[in-house]
Amino acid sequence: MSKVQNFWVVTKPTKRSTLIDILFCADMKRMELQYKGGLSGSEIIGTFTTKNEAEKVAKMALLKAGAITRL
Image (cartoon, rainbow, N blue to C red; front, side):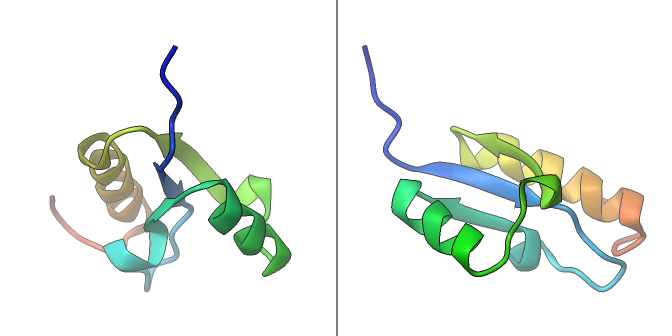
């Protein structure tokens, strides 16, 4: 059984968000700090094991939010 050490998190964007605002790499300790800092579960679009998959979802979210006009 493999253990996931790090994972990628995508949060909901606003119209002014950039990729770096909504996409970050985390481990369980960092997620704990994010929650303590105010991040709520409802703000998270998803968690992913690969950066590539997370980037695709993040870019689609930015497009849908109107923060970018094309991929």
